[in-house]
Amino acid sequence: MTGGFVVVSADDPGPHSSQTEQDSRLLAMMAKVPVLDPASPAQAMALAGTGFDLSEAFGVPVMLRPTTRVCHASQDVNAAPFLPPVREARFRKDPARWAATPFTEGCCTTVSPKRSRRLRRGPRPPRSG
Image (cartoon, rainbow, N blue to C red; front, side, top):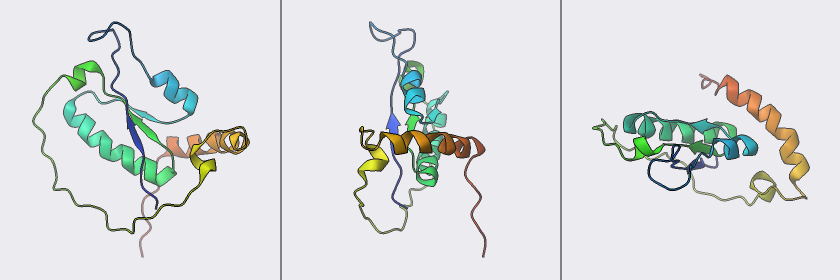
């Protein structure tokens, strides 16, 4: 396990708080990464954990996309105690995994459709025994 990668992009569809409309879903679709759209602050907190779980299970970045209304809202949430995962910190340099350069472009485009099908099915339950 190498860790999860969640990108938070606070969008402003409308526009409500800015002069230009912001919607990063098309960028995520072009990059072939899953997008999680929370409807409330509590759901945003829950989906952040889900995003890290999906990212670690499938080895892809995940976008968490709260909108202006969610970002400007406040809500009481019951947070579970934080328990950091027990694992060794390590870094393995792998440019082909993250960098879409002309050298690695072929590998990224052939892996993405397979990864997309696996993401739609969801993570497998842990094996017992």
